[in-house]
Length: 506
DNA sequence: TCTTACACGTC
DNA sequence: TGACGTGTAAG
Image (cartoon, rainbow, N blue to C red; front, side):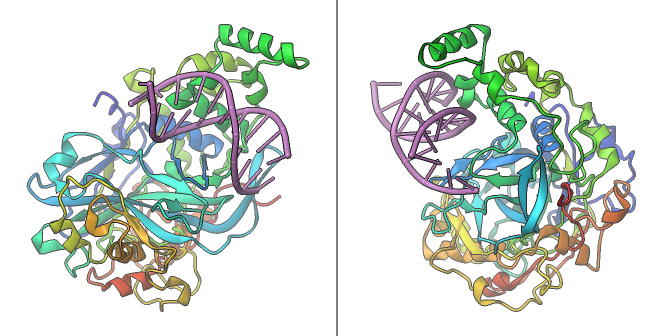
């Protein structure tokens, strides 16, 4: 697509150590993404390019917020990727999950995010299976893969299979590619899969926007919020309207979009794209492991990478946005959508790296069966849920199966249950739940997971912040791929270390 | 903080 | 044209 202009590639092949700042990835217009990749045998060579990276970066700078509602709310920006390196004839299942980035609860005060306490217990982990799954490699690589229909909810009893999150908590979306051919069924020991994470897609779940700048960015770029964009005419019209009813009228846009020197919740100040503490840079670490295992809950967050910014910036234009609030009106006029292709940045991740350990969570048990049986025609998304482990769970040592299954993680509880699967087998049926369970069960916060991985692959990027040596993204452990559904549930990822890049509690 | 109805927009 | 996606404002 035209959009794929700037991309970051994440291939599991690149050895972490070898990743140098200047690796090929960087040479691309966009900086290497913090993405982490975990690859298993048979999954080498797969590359995932994050689309619209520039937009993601804009949000990330400010501290991305995603609305969660009882009915379920889509993510914006939408998670879209371009995948290459798949075997054209093999079948794959693409799924996503959203794991806790850490075990903190956040608050937005003084125009910035800060830690306000310990996180609530992780919601049951759920996996969202792309509606086209399973599909051949040629299908996935032919076009962009969009997860636009994925919805986030704060309803712990959500019956729709949406991904359940806690408000004011930080999360990291992850993409898992699971090979689904006969010899590689989901849940089988040999299931091959790889996981990709892009640190710039991390976000804080909220029930209402906290940072006005985020609201503004959403309005400017989301077509469905077009009605809130202010054109001069519209503003006048609005003002007139408002005045007629109330007092002093201030253009909505002005009001809403006040600009405050916002501090990037994700880390530093929101100045340049480059400096997010959050982002894991190239974090491309890949490990061979069972991705399928439920994504570990919180995985470690990417560490701030100074360099990253630079990369980010490659991407074009953000000008107005960054500029002050006062210019808002104008901003509105230009939507992301309308932006030139150059605006769309994509991330390219080498999935082939020496496999970073992937979150085990993603392993959908029983998937294989379903996958094989179900037809692509069935496009209902089903969710599989599992209790979501937190990456940082101390009890877990790593994204290994070693963690005992806690009651909370019991596979398939009535409420958590599912993974969103397009095909029936997985649909909200019990079977589906199995998968789901796998998915998040016991995923520790990313940070913990990462940090604890004994075997860590480093990102190509230079260490971002000394303090955060262990960026979740970069380090993954590899685990045996053969786990039973139950086992999956028990998997916990632990990534240690990384503390949220966001501002510390004040 | 969260929920809801609403106007406005896309698809 | 209707279903659905948005942020807003009120409660």
